[in-house]
Image (cartoon, rainbow, N blue to C red; front, side, top):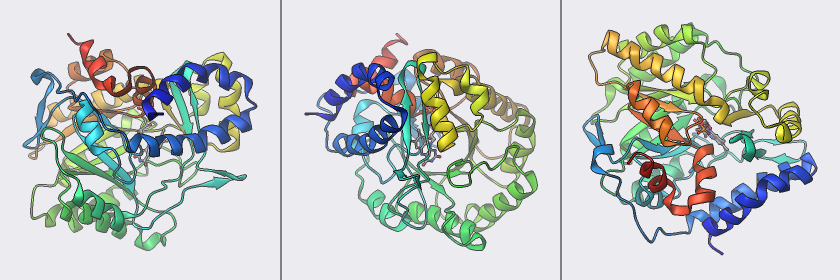
Length: 373
Ligand SMILES: Cc1cc2nc3c(=O)[nH]c(=O)nc-3n(C[C@H](O)[C@H](O)[C@H](O)COP(=O)(O)O)c2cc1C
């Protein structure tokens, strides 16, 4: 059976299934089911490819992005599904997050790479811990991807906590260089994974952030021999007051963009946005694993943070071309409209993509953009 057909059937059963299954079984089922599903999806081809209307395309850093929406990091960790994404109508493709070393991801209380969706809430929790095959292997894969016009390739790179602390940042730079040398079009630095440094508090320590960004700037940005824009991705938990300092540092050090943002660890804040039928499961997951909350609960914060960043760019225009990306809770055309009105250049989706895929199959971008007409 095709993965998209399976997803359609499972999508209909999911709310009921999650109501009757004991929490621990539900997590076990979805943690392993997610991986099998992605494997099956990677083997599918899009028969009826979709070219988004020309008026949705945009030019960022001299590259054409065929639409304002693309996948978020973590969906295609090892470079799967590029052609599928491009043919569905994605504005770009993002591989990773990759790490220098291959990682198998978190195991806690015998659960491997825990994940759970909350379909009635349009949300999910995950405690994956950056499983991926490592940057060397994935840069080779990136090298072999055949480009579809209008769908540039980006790669997200994260620091690996299994590497000695003193070497971590060097390996992030080494990883980004590998993807740059493999012909990838832009890089994304993941500064915000809540699943490898559990409970790491926000706000960011701006001194540490500045030190790390300076290292990346001196060892990568200033040594680029071709155009390779680098965007830094921060948490959706970033306090609004930190935007000016973060943006000033990114401008000054020659970064090309910012992305707000990654999953949230503010479990209490989001609890009210979880449907009452799914709250017990949410409490179970948050208590047992912690992890990051994604999906609809992040819709407002991602817009506020990204809109604040876009306003800051307009007010203080840096000398380099600088773009703001928005990630968190995007699942409808209205979200894209809100982003456009705020001057946000590009949107990424993860949780909403899979919710919509379950309804629309490979027409997932087509249906969303039809709402624009
Ligand atoms: C299962 C899962 C794995 C993820 N892995 C990554 C990752 O490897 N790197 C990263 O920067 N973000 C990762 N994220 C966060 C997403 O890229 C995105 O920032 C977050 O889910 C919010 O977007 P959404 O509300 O559209 O899901 C992951 C999210 C989920 C649900």
